[in-house]
Image 1: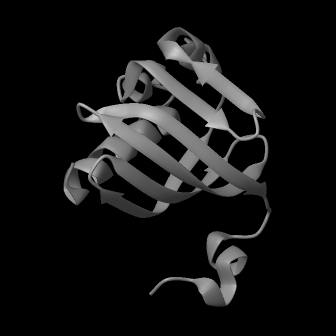
Image 2 (image 1 turned 90 degrees about the vertical axis):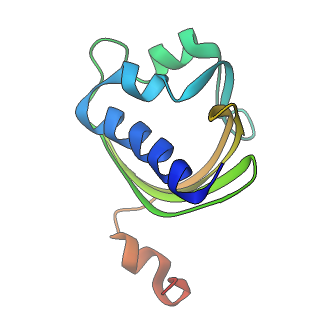
Length: 125
């Protein structure tokens, strides 16, 4: 997958979550996708479990913002800020198959700081 296609894919997920359109976000995942936060803090397998995790027909208000997205072949990486009941900054690594996500692995830290303060001098220019 090229960079532009990867950005579109990941932004489609964010747009789905940001607008409460679970189906839109879910369409970016394979039927047998695995979504997890190691070591099994969260683990969801398949679209049915993801649908429920994403909020189903009545998802809670949330905001997902991507800061950096990089792809190399079938592996993509993104840094993000997620706001729901709390705010998290994190990193997701995805494995792509046929233009959609087969595996999603994320690491995140709860923080009330804005992104720029959170990353401080390690910020990418």
